[in-house]
Image (cartoon, rainbow, N blue to C red; front, side, top):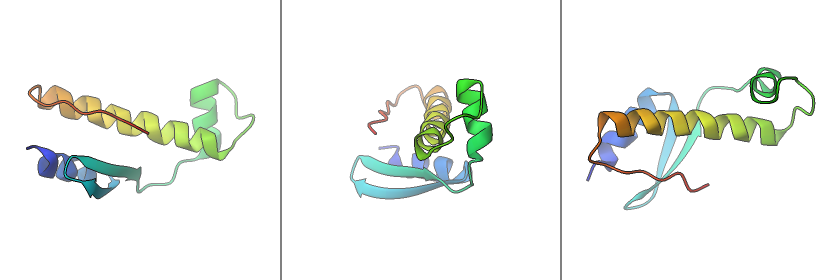
Length: 82
């Protein structure tokens, strides 16, 4: 089981990680997300800067970390569920 190594990896990526079960982790970002920058990068303009934009950015960032993890550990699989 690679979960302990994944937790260490995500924490090095400045993520908060909590165990929700034997194969389930809750992952969040420790660093602040500038909503205007996120909106501009995601949607091309800083209109409608809202919590969903921050959530979308955080999800995209965590997903990128998981892609790197899977590339480094091709024997594993991870699934982003929420």
